[in-house]
Every structure is written in structure tokens, then in C-alpha cells.
Length: 334
Image (cartoon, rainbow, N blue to C red; front, side, top):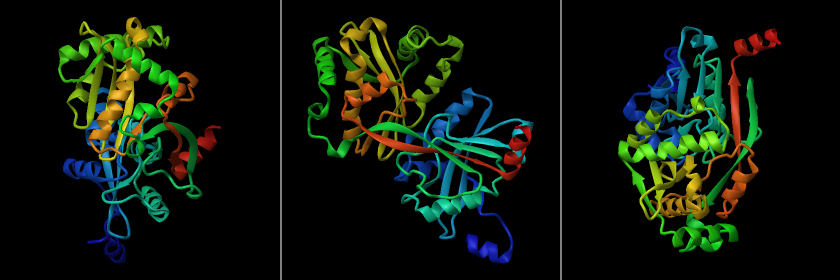
């Protein structure tokens, strides 16, 4: 029974929680899906952050098509019902609704928000989707938006050797890596993961000045290593030591760099640049259209690194929808 039929009869609701196979099908087919839309991603996050539960809502449009919204939903008695909270997807990564066979139109987006009003979630945060962005000029009650930027490489526009499109500093770094004899491979075992995690912790503490307690747990990386679409790749020196590594998520049209680490001892070899170059070639060989460096939180040095690969700057709209009750509660507190 379609949504229109249910509406005429006054029964049912235009949404449902999806089962695992339906979620997997949409995420593996949709032209708007990133690796963060995959069930494996949300379930990996929820497995190691017990505040969240991985769920995907199927929102039935008037056309009869489903728009799938992957989320991590906050657990707990006080986070249910009209005060419930959810994030699409893990805090700080792409999310939002996707259709199985096409991108959303502005009319689809308006329908999505109409259905979300009855979903029973008081606050829904979405960190945008570079492939299927929120359209400009959409007026929805309780919707707030902000802008950020990411850097992407259009893979189908690259020449055979993409280094000719890189900036001089990046090309120089790649020559250093080649002279140092760096090699690259995807890691798949716990023994391979441990040295990568060691340089991640060292980088977190000494380069970024963050407490180790704020690090992602090693178990999360182990779960991602086995999750479909998520891959950890490392650059190795001539002695077989890890010089750099990073986590990448693959989707039909999109490869995105999520998190990485650099060995301080190997910085002079430019292993991070060499690893990114290797994955740009890897993503192109798999038929991806975009290599996405992910938003940089406005860090100038990080953005300069990404521009070195000839990456174009693209704006991404992040949005938050608050229910009338949550908006009223927020005003009362203020």
C-alpha cells in the first residue's frame, strides 16, 4: 500500500525502521551515498560508543520511492520520544537522506522534512552530503544551517598521470617518497594494525596536543578494518616500518579520507602525500568519480596539504532540525 493509499484510508505512517538488507542495498546502489551512509559505518561507531544505536529510517515519498536516512540514535530514557536525539551519521561525518536510483530534488527534500516531523526525534543533526546536498532556499520550520568546505578531486577529469595537476610542493614530496622506496598496502590483521595505532596515538599527543583519553579506541579501528567499504592503508619504509596510514571509506561514486596518522620519524619522506596519491589512483581504478579529503575544520595547514593535490574547494551545508517542543524548551532555558 502506497503512502497516498494509506493517507486516504487514514492508517499507517509514511516511515519505517529498515532492516539490515534494505539498508545495505540502498547504500551500495545510491548515487548519493558516501561510505558514511553504509550500515557497517554506523554499526561500528555504535559498537564502540554506547551512547548510540545504529538505525536507518525509510521515508516513503508520495511517488512511492523510499528515501533512506541512516542515523546513530542516542540511547537512554531521557533521549527518547519528543526529546530524542540523532545524528546522521557519526558526529562530524556525511549523512542525510538518499534515494536508491537517483539524487533528491528540492521537492523530495521538502517531503523528507515533512515526514521527519512525525518521526519522533526532537533534534536531528546532519553534517551534510557533498554528493546530494541540501538545496539552497529550502524553508523548513525549525531548520538551521551552517556552511563548511571540503576539498575534492574529480577523478574522471584527471590525466593518466595525475601528478601533472598537483602543485609543485606536492610533486616534490612525491619524489622524496619514491627516492625513499616507500611501499603501500591495505592492512587486514591485528598485527598490522598495532603499529599504525601507535603512530596515531603519538601524533595525537605530540602534534595535536590532545589527551590520549580522547583518542578513538583501537577496537574501533579493528572493527572498521573488517567492515565492508572501510579500509585502512599504510605507507611503509624500506625496512617495513609504518611511515603513515589512513582510513578510507569507499562507496559507488565516492572515496573519502576519514582519519590518518604520520610517523614523526618519517616526516621528511612525505609519506602522507605519497599515500594520498596512491589512494587517488586506487579510487580511480575502482570507478569512483570523486576523491574527497573531508572537511578540515578551517585548519589552514591541513587545507594547504589538500590543495597541493589540485583539489577543488566545495561548500557543504550542515543542518539541524529541532522539533517545536525542543525549540520551546530551548527558548525557556535561555
